Image 1 (cartoon, rainbow, N blue to C red):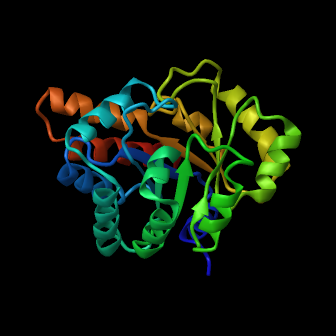
Image 2: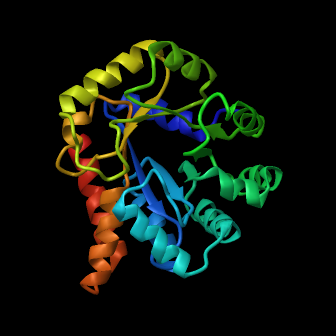
Image 3: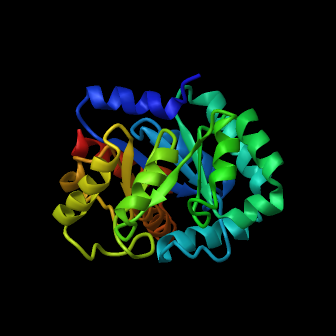
Length: 266
């Protein structure tokens, strides 16, 4: 059975553009608003990434940390997130959804229970930020057996030999971290250099769907459109923060940005 993530990439390549992946934190700034956001932006996003909030998100910058803090204030948990996924999948057909977070939350919830619910509620993929290859091989294999894509991570400092091994074990999508920074950091290298580095990774696995994340904004996304896919998260979280501060509707503002992002890469 083909995973919906692979179907998206197959279709996107026919349109000669990268896939647009959006990341928001589940429960920011309420479960209701968070649900409305992912449903609304799915009109323009190709793949939805939904993060589960964590009190010490080591890979995330200030914007996503603020989003996590707001969500945690609502006492959101993985059961609530699975309810969100169930509602999303019932309303939005054939739109891939990836859950993203940290392993200790999965461990506390229970791997068996987590993977069973992922399958039950039709989660298409998972990203476990702090569980690198090869330590993640067992969990990745278990996810694959349930037709859930386990997204592997590679970075600019990943050796060529290690990249080849990771790509060999990867599923429908690989996440390339564009720079050594937390999410939302200002690009420390030029978009051209990011694409050059990306191409080195891509040559190690030309048939793999490799997306770029970290530091992508409305200002630079167009210059990175040669990638298979582009992930934007911190700018969306920042937009939610600004909307709340100005007492505006974050659903409207976030969906407007995602629409603009789609226009820039089309």
